[in-house]
Image (tube, rainbow, N blue to C red):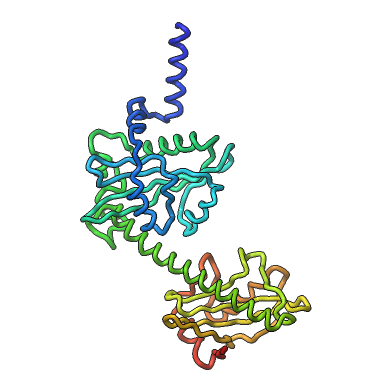
Length: 340
C-alpha cells in the first residue's frame, strides 16, 4: 500500500473511531447546521427560568418548516454560570474517574404546538474532555447517535423511535395528566409548574434572608453584648436559616448566634407578609434559650424543635414546610409577640 493511501486510511479509521459509528455524510450534514436562532433560545431561557444559557449553544438543528428543533449546549462545569443552570437540581449523569477538564452538557428540545412554543431541557451530563472543542464534538455525536437522529425521512421529527416529539402512548407517566399530546408538550407543562414553584421559593428565600440580615444588624447594633456574632454550623452554606409556607407569606426565622461570652443562643422570629406589609413577631412556642449540643451541630436544635410538632420532620433540600396544620395551629395570637 502506498504511503498516501495508508495515511488516508489511518485518517478514516481515526474519524470513524471518534464519530462512534456516524458516516462521513452524516457528520457533514451535522456541520451544515451553523445558524443558531438566538431569539427562540432567549424565549426558551425565560420560559425555563434561566436554567439554560443561549451563549453556550453551539449546534441548533431545526426541522424543515422550523416548527421543531433540538439544540446542544456545552460549557465548563467550573463556569461561573454553572450553579445558576443547575440550581433547581434534576437528574443528570456524571462521569467519574476520567482525565481532563469537567464539562456540563445538555440538550434543549423545542416544538411549536397549537400556536405556542414548548421547551424541555434534557440529557444533562457532566463529563471529562481534553478541551472545549472535543467536549462539544463528543457530546453532539453521542447524543445524536443515542436519539437516532439519522433514520430515513422525517422519522426523527415525527417521533419515530420514541423521542419527545412522539405522541404519548398508554403507560407514559405524563399521559394521565396530559393525554393526547406529544411527550415534549406534556413534559414542558409539567416542568413549567415545577419551575414556577421552585422559582417562587427561591424568591421567598432571597427576601427572607435579606430580611433576617437586616433583623440581625438591628439586634447587633442595639445589643452588641447579647447579639455578638452570627452562627454558621457545619451543615450550613450561609448564615441564613428560614422556613416558609407554600404561599411564601408566613416565614419562620430561627436566629442562632453567639453572645460576648461565646455561648450559642437560639431565638425564633416570625414574619407575616400581607400584600406589601410585613409584620414581625417573636415566636414564643419555644423559649429563647442557650443551645447545648455538640460543636457544629447546634443548628440541629431547630430540627429537634420542629419535630415536636411534625413527627420525623427533616430539613432536607428545601426550606418550605407544606404541612397546613403547622402554620394554622402554631402561629395564633397567643403564640406571637408583636415587635413594633
